[in-house]
Image 1 (cartoon, helix red, strand yellow):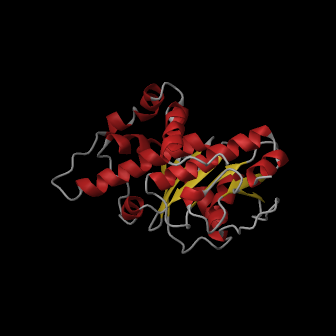
Image 2 (cartoon, rainbow, N blue to C red):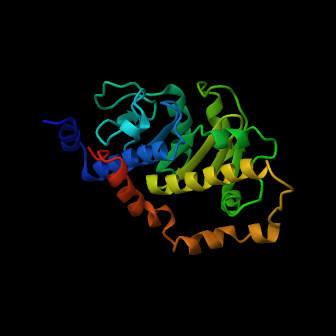
Length: 252
């Protein structure tokens, strides 16, 4: 019997579907070049009422992750299902406090992309200079660097800083997004990463043109219009078809 069959038999249909979507999310992060070897993480809350979460098997490349290889842990980061892989302690510290504080945090994604880290090191953070930044600035918070996220004392600071926002810039560190689903968290990260990439490139050119505040104030309304009210779910089926062509096997 395959590992996928064994895990699938042990979990609910809802958890298995979440595993498939989260594994796809990991592979898409690798596909778009936002992974940092094995050192970043995406977590998802398991449906069913218990405080259980899925996170990557520490040591596995994102392009290798499958639905059955994801590790299930409790709110303290302890494995609640057999797995030969450990869990990144810094990864779970960041994710556990966001999941614990936010009922809407079904999925939390964190990256160390070069563009994201570059902008996180800039005093003014995300600048209002692109359509991507227009969306990000509608729900953006910042968190000051406190070293590698290993200390419990950092948790309340993270919770305080992110509040109810979708986008969190971890200064000198990277990017974090929150969504109800992996699809939502991925779409938010796609826009966040693009805003940072555009900013780094634009800063190498001439004088920047800021978007006026009266235009920035339209962002929330226009996000819903652009995505037909579907958020990240609009592009998700197409992204899965792309994975099925380029890197199949994530649903195993």
